[in-house]
Structures are given as structure tokens and as C-alpha cells.
Length: 72
Image 1 (spheres, rainbow, N blue to C red):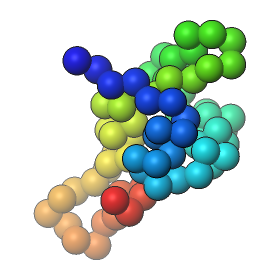
Image 2: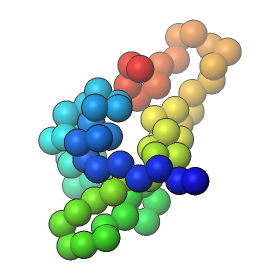
Image 3: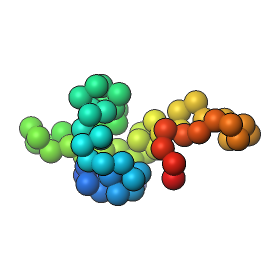
Image 4: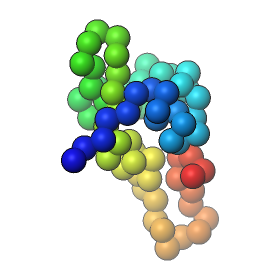
């Protein structure tokens, strides 16, 4: 079952400020329909599996020099 998170819930989970998350949406690094949905005009719900994939995009777990987009 898919998990949908509010901006505040996502912020706490990935330790990134809500403003930074909104900036990623504004810069289109997080895309509607892929990383989040809008059930109403302003409300955003983030798709956890897509966010998790985005966080670790390009991550090679065998290479300790590479880092994910955030430190978990």
C-alpha cells in the first residue's frame, strides 16, 4: 500500500525544511504526478516510494564516496 505524506510529514522524515521541499517543487525537481499529487488546489501529498527513489537516484551502494541527496 502506497504511503502519502504531507509536506510537514515529509520534512520530518527526510530532515529537510518544509520551505526547501516547496522550493524543490517550484524548481520542478519534484514533479506533480510523479513525486506528489494535489487532492485540492493547494494541498500536496508526497508519494513516499517516488521520493525515496528520487533521494537515492544515482546512488551506488558499493561506492562509499557517493552520497544520497540527504543524510539519513
